[in-house]
Length: 165
Image 1 (cartoon, rainbow, N blue to C red):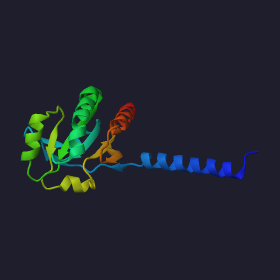
Image 2: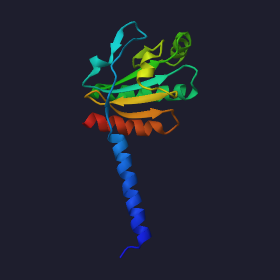
Image 3: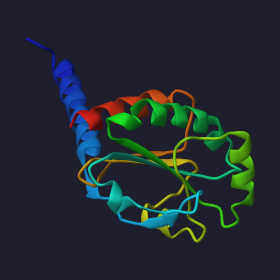
Image 4: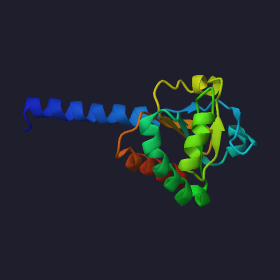
């Protein structure tokens, strides 16, 4: 018969797993928005319904943002044909530094400009970078604040899981 301490450990482990699953399973409807893109178009989140959407809020002065940007571009190139869209949302009021940086480090995914931080506020962005995953039904499924090397593995797992739904 298992000891009482073992039973407590199993219960604690089960509760921890349930909380993790519940936290990852919680959904809320993604706030809709329209923002100007780098190429002059207006991009609307509503137009992307049916796609898995990854929104990455970033700034040119943010070191981790710069570090992850080429990795995000690889993800976009790899999964865009499967119903995945990545939107890079620059949060700077003046976009000159972002434009300059993007000339040196071009990306293939759309870059949008949130000059007045209205969209950043809708998504409660409190760290740079912040990344939000939205499922095909328009629900927020995962949120990441900050970036450290290795986080891209979790991004990939989440992209693949959402694409399978």
